Image (cartoon, rainbow, N blue to C red):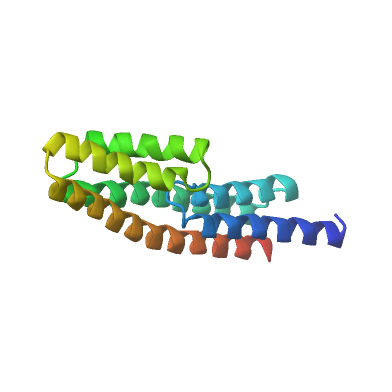
Length: 164
């Protein structure tokens, strides 16, 4: 493969990964998955070496870890503050639909509003509903920090692969 093509593939992959990393700021955006898909695309286009297969496996484990921790932190913190799992599920659904219908901020607005509304309807106490919303917000913040760190590690692992 000519050097300019290899360099182009490298830079395009890195840019997509950086978009995925900073896309993590939007709670519903699947930035970790975007980073993983960029690494997979890189492997498909350039060919998987034994090192590439091994490091892609590490990137895949990090993807699974990031997605799992993301869901646990966001939901657990809100649940700890009193939110029902049904409210959180509806909030997640509203976040996905909001993102699809009104990108990029629709989900960011829809999810907390639905959780607040559902918790108010369930408990008939605005202070308890606001506590659930606050728990969701804290969970999102913690989740962002963890996902961002995992995303950085994924990109670092890919760089080891791409620069070898």
